[in-house]
Length: 327
Image 1 (tube, rainbow, N blue to C red):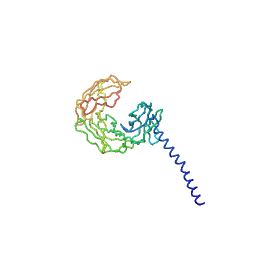
Image 2: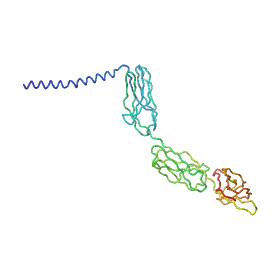
Image 3: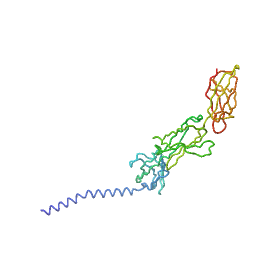
């Protein structure tokens, strides 16, 4: 009786294994059938090239095995992908061909998954999952003087933005090369840190002549902005005084810095923004820092007048005075 029970237990165990064994054999048979499906495309050897911070070229190899085959690349932040390139033809040859597609609109310093998918009437093939990581956005600098030109002796700001990966809280320095622009660039003041958005602003006081300015990053990788020439306009005062002769006025003023020999033009401003020339003069020497001009002119029309000082020494630029009402 005991022996009979042991035989029945062994039979039950043997019969219990048969469904599992049958399933394994069936799975292997199906896999073999899929691999051997006649004419189905195959994929091989994916890679990337021309990798930047926002784009990449996806490359791969496939064999159409004599069937008209199309392909595309799947890509995304996970192995689930989520995006794909447009469907493209790969022909119906019987040898391996190289395929590629350009992908843009990517995020910098980000890892992406991708694979190649080939499909035809005979079936579909997918390469294994691979990854690539986009590059950093290169740092770049843009600057501008506010205002430009600046009046002689007035302060101004050299403002700008550092763009790219790592632009926030990055040290930058201001450099200057004054007229005649032969001394080379030298650092002005202390370094500053950019804002969280990469912005910065250098206050500059007492610029006395036209100056080339640029900004550089501080660190292992040096990035230099384009050179901006900050022009310094002469500072002009303008006055009008009636003389004892009827209809005649003395127009006079000063120019800083001293610009002896510069031309002076007097203008009347008319409605609509037009100007009417009212004669002129030449700037005379004065002190080491200030020169003067003065002339008596006949004023035929009362109104708003101003003086224009025309400078040609290269160290400064021409400038208008503030307007004066003559009535």
